[in-house]
Image 1 (tube, rainbow, N blue to C red):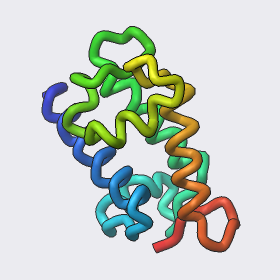
Image 2 (cartoon, helix red, strand yellow):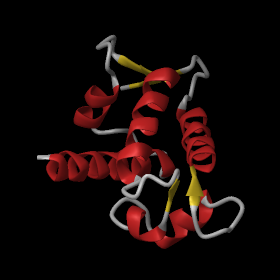
Image 3 (cartoon, rainbow, N blue to C red):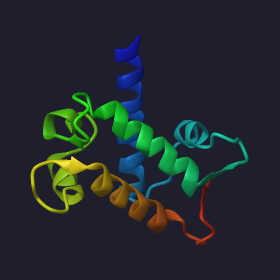
Length: 117
């Protein structure tokens, strides 16, 4: 069961991240998953909470950083390199959250702190 949840979370993370990185809209299913309070929009807090949870799920060895093997299902090598800001071959929680916050901000078209359908 835990593996199924991890796989689902990784796929959701990959799809949501890929959509945001390409400035493509989130699918309705991904959007609804991120919209935890069901108000029809995704706040930065909802998005950040999901991404922090995703980081924890992907960090299989619990060392506080993501390795290439841990992210292989969610990130391409180019995406990994982009997120690995200090180029140490690992993605720290800070690097990860900085990147997803940047992507959120870029996709918050009206700058109201929310993503909309």
